[in-house]
Image (cartoon, rainbow, N blue to C red; front, side, top):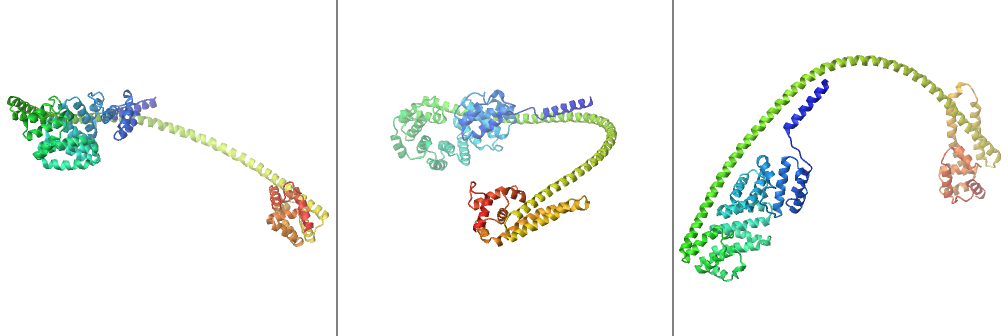
Length: 587
């Protein structure tokens, strides 16, 4: 019962600790998000395809949902799919703007601002970009920060904040250069050049124009943008004769853009050809992007006044001033709003930290109380365990005594068994001795038959006679019950067995003396010393089976085969022993 209570308390403690540490979890989609993020810059189409396969309903915690939302927004943007809805990005806004790192907040604010731009909500877009710009000293995502500066410069242009427009684009161009992104760099430089021309800063315009021209070979696809800004530069800074010659080459106005028409109207105004300027200006749609720009609102009253249209010029001046005041008010409101929101974010962040500290302290207190309770229960269990150990030790002592008695009985049985084994071993040794004696008797009989039947030379006969004498002497001593013969007998048997090689060597030497021609013939055919000994046994009259029994080698058939190959005999040719004895007669 006590153990069950302890297990329950330990389980509750573990659950509480896990609950206070984290209630979140990640799914397998997290690895898929890693793959999509790695492909985002190099293969945005593949990244979008991978993200589209993820089931949003199966995503895990808020962080995983936020990461999916941000990566999907990035993929849509990089695949030039504009959206005016926050449905995709909203989980990232809810999570990263409060809990994300500087880079995660920067990316979220950038894509949030892009959506506001797509919705033409320029006020909210500017507020969002100003918040993002506040992260510039903490973020490491250079590409997103540069893209944010370019997006912010669009709002600067529409609100006629030309200094900020130029500054943001030049900063973005510098960052793109560090990233080796020449295409984005040139686009930012062209925007900065256009802004510096509008400010009338020729020195800055000249320096930017030289860089734009140097990039024209590397990035040829921006030729239309370069042509337009070069036209703007010429009308702003070139002499009147050059401007006049350039305007004379203008083709049909229907083929050129409103921005180019605005440049041409400004050129005619500079040449004091007011009617032509007014004629070109009237071709621009006042509701178009160019018609709503500050440059158009600025030049229109001047051209109207130059053509004597004072009433229209006054209205145009009034429209221009109202637009300037309106934008100034927006800028002031945006900066104030951003400052307030930043202050609220800091306050909320401090409050969030305080709440987390309270939760941590509460969790620690709960864990401490549980540890004390567990300690008390553990102490009680230790006392009970100590008593059980004493009882178990006494039982173990009694059991050990019984085991010792059993071991002593086992030792006695083992000694008895060893005695039986020793007796059996002696019996086996005696049987082995009888077998060896039988082999020696058989060898002696073969040698006696050979001695009486074969006509051999005297050295060979002497060698055989000596071998028979050794065997007879040994066999004469074997039949005895005296224990003094039993110990050296096995040594004699092994010695006489080893004497076989001496007998075969002596036989080979005798044949070299009595049949030198035969031995030379065998040497010429490459027979080894062991093979010569084998052949000499055939020469003295032994058969193959008798030789096998004599030399006690299982491979003697292989030896016979090797000798036949060396002597040029096939398997179907004459018997090896007969062939050797025929050679003895011929040689």
